[in-house]
Structures are given as structure tokens and as C-alpha cells.
Length: 479
Image (cartoon, rainbow, N blue to C red; front, top):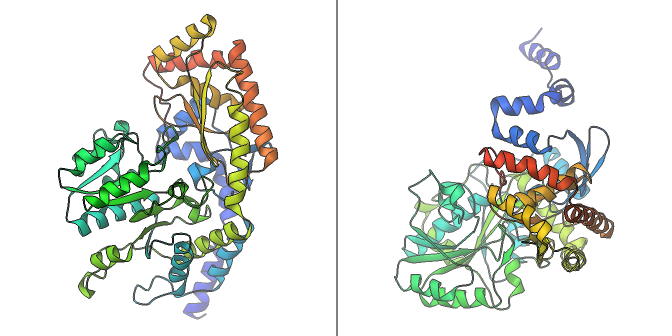
């Protein structure tokens, strides 16, 4: 027997079988996470009854081990823009694997990155070039590096309550102290209130600001930049020779009813734009930093600097194929227009409930990025319960709504931020009117129960005990 024949026989005997592995070990999922990964995640899931076993998924729905259908209003924090397992994206990935491309040689120019950049820039007419990385935080890191290099200035401004990522550079422009604590020293950056042009101008006057990075709609709390703010901020920045960076990692690719959220305001043309999440098709991690030609030319100013900013897996064929398929689906299926119509339907139906429920303070947002905020009730009976929750820990009431939505109505949502009474809805962009009906009916039932003093408050007492004991975290995940 030849060496080759022996190797082939050995390979067949020890062939990797993913299905068999999952069948054999899949039931250990929570134990494996507890032992080898973040041990607090399964603990948190067990505590609030989210320790489900999901077997399969399609579109905006997934099914648990008992065959029950669940509606996804979270979309993997926005990653599943087209829902799960879109057939066009699946086919593109099968095709690129079957093509056996000579990928990631690093010393050639494959066509797929250029084609995806061309397609992406077609939706960004004032931008010229793209750097492909592997995540949203990496896209932000690239933008920070580029801005600091081309301006020769060290400081980047960001908005209070912002979220731009958790790696060291992006953490420096993260407005949530809970994420930053214990990781100092960070980069020399300064927070300004979202919408406060006077505060922005005071910082710019110091002469050391490279850029302002801003989410047109903040993920934490779903707060939109005030009308006219982005345009005015852009003019101030350029007057002081600083740049505007738009973080569209969550808001980009149709989420808010336009391709980018900054496009809702006429005349806004950021110098750098960060995208990720939905560009992946839910399959292959990808991030992109888009920028103006002069910025890229200054960063990559000579052949000596050709690799001054790079990523080992950046622009890999699978990610590029997924991105191309996503943009094709968005164009062919008119996703942005669908988001605009469906988002308005969902937002308006929820907003109509504010007059019915005194615990419901506000419904806001754009497209399919909607914030539902709860507030202090008027009636004495509900005020006492609300006050008890707030005394234990702000944010518990929103969690009281999230839990029965999943447990009783099989709808997955999230709390929008720590110490915040806001639920954020960021469902797959493909949800339809039936999904809207299902969510509104379930939310109405939970709010009815909350106002009648039912099971929602019983769970609230459990949360209060945990909060007082110091064992509760209402924000275990990204805002």
C-alpha cells in the first residue's frame, strides 16, 4: 500500500462528521460554555429563563427543541439583516467554496474585494475607497487610525452614551463607563453630548481634535441625532480641519429606512464611514471602513507603507461573496423600501399604545430600529411598584417585559442598555405585516398584565431580590 493510499484510508476512517458531533455532544452546550467560555453567559440565561435549545432557523424565525416557532426581534444584534439562511447568500457561499479560489495569497489582487468595494461605494457616492476587515470594532479602529494619521492630531471626540466597540481604540470612544472600567489607560478622547454643538466647538477650539465619531442613531437607548446636528457638526469639524466619522455598524445597510442613517439629513457627507454586521449575511464576519480618496492616499502614501494597515483575514473570498450577495438581495428585493414601510407600521402601532398604558412613556426610532421606553406611572398603585423596582436597580421593568415576551409569547427582544428602561427592536429587515401583528399582540398582552398587577410583577420581585443581592446585570450584551 502506498503512502498516499494509506493516508487516504486513514482519512476515511477518521473523517470529520459535524452532524454526528452535534448529535453526540449538542446537549452539553450550556455545560461547555460554563466550563470553557464566558461562565456568566449561561448563568444569566438560566436566571431569566432564556436557556432555550434552538434547533434550526429560517428568515425571521427559529425553532426550539420542542418544535415551537420563535419570532426574532433582535437579529443577532443586527447581524441577521436578511434573516437567517437567506437562499441567495447560501448559494453564493456554496459557489465560492466550490470555486476553489487562490484566496489570501496576499501577493495578488483577487476580483471579489474590488467588486464588493465598487458595489458598496455605489451606495456611498461621496466616498472613494474601502478597507475590509473582520468586524465592526475593527472598522472603527481603522477609522480612528486613519483620522489621527491624516490630521496629525491625537484626540477623537465621541458622544455620551455611544457604543463603538470593545477593542482598546474603539473602547476609548465608548460612552458607557461599565465597559471602560478597569481597562485604562485608553486613547486621549473626550465625550460631548449628542446634539450639543457648543460643546463640540469648545473642544475643537483646542486645536488637537482629529475627528468626531458619531452614531446617527445611538444603539444605547435609540436616541437620534437632532435634526440639523450632523450637517452643522460636519461644517464645524471641517472649519477646524477635523473629520466626521459615521459609525453605521448597526444603522447601516437599510436598518433605518435609508441605506445609511446619515442620509436622512441632506448635505451630510462623512469623511469616513464604518459598516459591518448586516454586510455579513449572518455567515462570515466582515467589517468595512469607507473613506475619501485623499485619506487613503495619505495613509498609503508610498510602497513602503503598503501594509501599514492590514488584516490577515480581511477581504477573504467567503466574506466578499457574502457581502456581494447581501447587496444584490437588498437591491433586487427592494429591502430599503420594505424597511421604511414595515418600520413605520410597527412604530406607529406601538406609538398608538402610549395613550393606553401609563407605564409606556415613548416609542421612537427610524425604520426597523425602534426604542420602547417605559416611565413612571401616574396611578398610586403602579407608582409604588415602579418605585420599588427603581430603588432596587434602574432597568428592571424593561427586563420584566423582555422575559415574558420570550417565555410566554416566544418573541426574542433585548434591553437597550444598562440602567435604562428601554427595549430596542432591531429585527431582521425582512419581517412582514404578520410579524408586526404578532409582536404588537404579544406586547399588548404583556402590558395588560403589567397594568393589572399579574405575573409580570411576580417576576419583578425575583429580579429585585437578585439586584439587592448584587447578582443581577440587566445589560449582559451589547447595547
